[in-house]
Image (cartoon, rainbow, N blue to C red; front, side, top):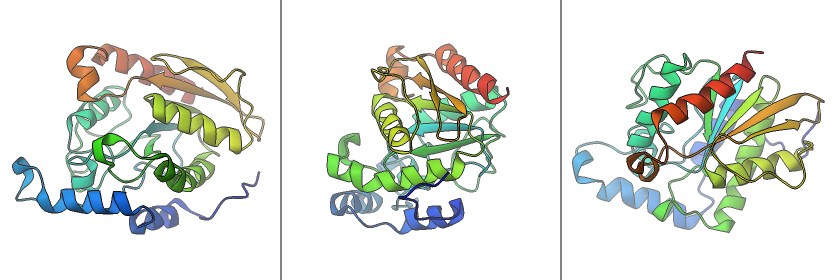
Length: 239
């Protein structure tokens, strides 16, 4: 299987390119401003202030797709879903499922490791108000496309956090030649969709509400609900 838009031959090469990216002026300005101004509770810390690569092994069987890094989470720590409440929820659930070495992810040097799982975001820089523009989404899409391509040989299931990531993943898979049900399934927590790759292999996509504070504080997403969708994705990957 070949992907015409493929630019990188390894995740190591891709991750290095992600970190160096300065394509979107608004995002560069924002991520760097946040790193200088900082949040008062982190004023003594040195912020990462660069784009965020994926995190997890190159032979992952489960891919978790998010929207974008948090301004004072991943943009501060340099690791996706690390250093904020969303990450506390996600890594706690992954640890309970046996997919993370420790139950927390606080910084790049905390010893955390993912097991059979890799996390990536559709947009790699922290956007103002968590809202990247359509142009910024499009500029970042090739990174996601290549990462999916590189991980596809071992991927068996996708866990998608939120509607934007859901749309981004289906768009990429469609362009990569996947057979997708029509009409395209709408996002929802616990929604399951089977797609068929150009390699003829079936893979499962599972939707989940994003573990944002807005969702967890209001009870829209509970620990039980998050554990449930992770279990579904893990069960598929273990087949």
